[in-house]
Image 1 (cartoon, rainbow, N blue to C red):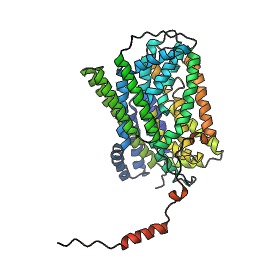
Image 2: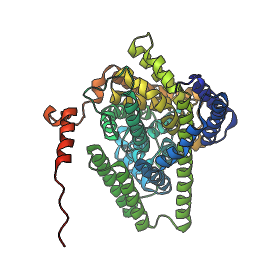
Image 3: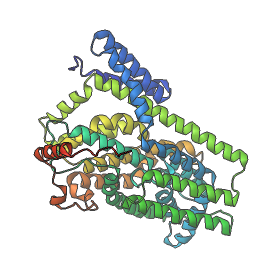
Image 4: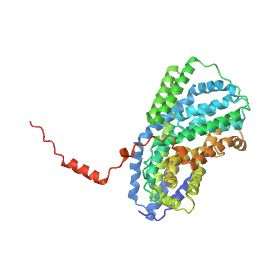
Length: 485
């Protein structure tokens, strides 16, 4: 039905933002609370039918049956377990020694561990906690601002490198957004197909690799001015064996996911099993520590699922007000050039990501802005990569950037001022901005690894006449008589 107050959803978002900043309550509770408040107002004003709200239970059940959500607790488990093991410490020490002659062994080692561990670590928060614990005791004379920037940047690598949980959930969100965009009057799907998570993996790999290589150069340039004093105990053969096992398993899983041979859920499960086996073999954790790992995993998984349920409730009420269609009409009907309008939408996403974490962005904001953005750019894969790069960029802008806040909060030894931290982050931010602009003006940058398209004869759609004839042929087939006794 046509909603009489289509801008009410904007007031929902404004109310949610004020509650997040002013109350400090869990975001999932604020999502459900603000949605309930505006749903009651909609029913009282006659803008929505109370019977439609019963769809919340069905949407929640359907959400919990989603296959991809099986990966969520697995990634949380891997992240929690990695924080309690010495595997990451061993890798860090090994990388630092191996790269010591470059003059910036500590800095490059932090980036290397971030690139290797972050995709299996689940989230920016988990990666920040792990890297802050690793890097801080080994700072030596490394500048505090440079250390904060290093931890923050390394923690965001998992945002764009498959098979991270952020990338998996964004890929699933982009599948739904592309489906919605195909129903907009201003967008023609044409010969394209609806993208899936694998398409997002392929599209993001080259931009992510470019960012990582340039960031390594920046880390070397900043770190070579300082001498980091490595204070670590000699590593046992068992520790090296564990680390080598993890490296080989991670590389194989990353390759398998990228090639489509292994699903992301299977990769997470396999990574978890490898870690558990290595931990049991080395007896690195006792019974009490295992209980702590499982307790933290259940707690964090429950918080994420609660956030997802809250976002689902919020988005349903938001759509019942008709604000999603109103936003699409405003964006697609703008008199500004399409690229300028798309840039403004991405700027809005960046502002939201500056105060929200990755999961809140994926569950709440991206489902709203992605469909009209796809229609503007005409390329779902380009849109997905731009959203990833913008999220990553916003997480690195102090003082509210999520990765910077987590890096400062997780380490008591890193205490640089905001301005010094921003100065240390500027080269990383410049790299990220340049790559983002290149992807924005050059859609070809995300299509270099696209899967080969089958010949047209194999992909030709079946006409309605052929479908009707096929149905008639099936109906005319004689029925087999029952067997004689």
